Image 1: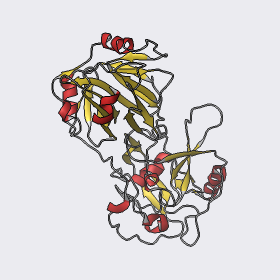
Image 2 (image 1 turned 30 degrees about the horizontal axis):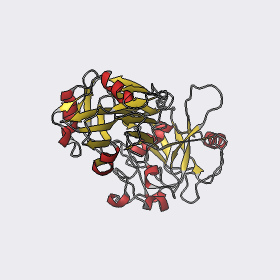
Image 3 (image 1 turned 30 degrees about the vertical axis):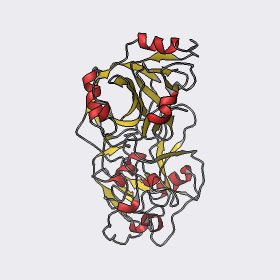
Image 4 (image 1 turned 180 degrees about the vertical axis):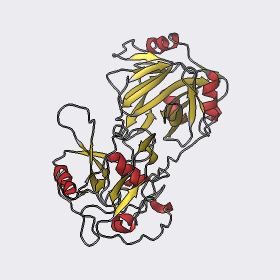
Length: 396
């Protein structure tokens, strides 16, 4: 396999934004819906309407309503272990300071205070720290925008946050400071818990200014990059559903007609959607091992599809099969939600009849292998998860 791959392999990483739906028993199939997954480039940022100058002590009333909290898997900048998948959240009405504390356009935002001190300063004004979902709701607005400036980030907001209004009229959210919230990571955990920060410091990359960006810090942290703002009204009880780690690997049956639809839905794989052959389980996996020295090195082997959970909040479907007589392939699909997948990475092997098996170990979450001859030089490749949320398939 190695000599042929060196010259005749097409490798594509992070292909999107094509979406696929699947039935839990039969496997994935194309879906008609889609969502933006491209770069968070600021070049397309639309002109924003002029902002009415803020007043000292001004509050913005945030109406009761629902919004899509969290972020889409594969979205640039997303950290799957911190940011949950998109889900609809309903919040009651509340009011939020239009500017960071002291909420006065004549004074600079207060930074360098711990979260406990921020709590106390809000309480002195008859207010409270905002919860993280209240902060995200005020940032995303009724349309659940990715950025406070809409679907793209306007970098001018980092330098002029008081001229940067979210769709609900709050100024400077996510623009030039990280902000304390009243929320903790894993609030039901015992012992000391990290506090949740929202927003981004002005010098950070565009993707960190997303409304869903979520950070953690010790509550006693004091930093010139961290400010806060206060809210009024009964605090909303809704909390972020923390991403959980499931089983590292699970075998899954994928049928031919569904795989055909997946292949046809993408330009890079449509050529494979003919004369599909699934390798026989478990005989084909045994063949791959028996071609080499026979030492499994603690790995399990399969030619079935694998559900793969490399880290909490990141889920993939990995498939190996053959097209025609001698074109084998390995594909990794990112799970977007409970029913949708998108192609994350592909590896096509021409003049390779297979079988090609997947080698995996529950003790090694972020990596698995594919091979046509286990233990043979040049006959094995790697499928690697790389932070924050991408997969690369390669042959070293």
